[in-house]
Image (cartoon, one colour):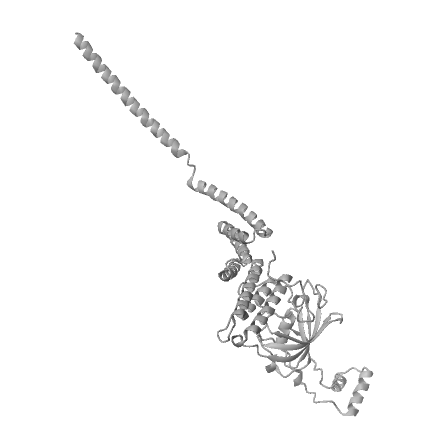
Length: 416
């Protein structure tokens, strides 16, 4: 039985956006499943637009400067003259260490429209993207890649650096595999495991994300499906925290709105999408050992579909982990009744019955230990009974002797 519903065959896609999967990342705590929050204010170097260079010098000065450069004469004044011959097309800026660990750096190639034009998390952006290996080998290019910033739709390197770009800015990004395709690499684009990448990014457009309350049902279903598929890709790569994040977003999108008319068929499709997301989320939460969260996801599925076998199976596993063996056995037996030929449920139920028997044996032993050895009670009672019996026997015997003695005295007296 597959762990999650309708997973793609693995890494499928044509261009960059269908394969821009997040690398393996350290799972965070329950309330921190989202991508690394890069909304903090990063310290930016001075904008190239603040340079004193006002434009290209007269032709004669430019020729003199080129001559001095060719002769390689060193000196501060001569270096300034040589620099002045280049028009301010590619402003000079040092590499910005985005996260402060040296694994993700960004350099401006062409300045944009100013800091106020930077996109915010939750907005939709469109970029022109070129991906190259560290040695300069071109890997892939997408002239119009669109995604929602901060939703985990693309590799982390893009999600983090595009937030720092200005509208119309061109930038060069160097990233370690941690924020790209990780230790698994990628088939499309063809990126070897553990490869460093260079990304050339041009921010083309920034738009507001659509209002979900006003989004037509058909578009809502399509958007939720894309988010769920992204979560499936994360799950396949073992990035379970990122998978939970994508499933959570898909669930938000699949919630019906009272402000938009929905047909019965669309309502059924939204409900089916919600059930799939909850089921897949439970699988990811189990991988992260978030048992309470996984149990809530299973219960939510069963509230809509009481006979959902996957939800019953995962609920049984959670209860087993929590030590609720009797209830877990009951839930798994119900799942097996719905799918009698399911070998996975058979195996899990067999292990669970064995654990349940062991638990019952331990409980009985503990119960006896708490009550103490019950054997002394009957023995003492027997002894008491025996002692009482001896006392009465002795009393009856003494009475008989006394009566016999009196009778004998009467007989002797009568004879006399």
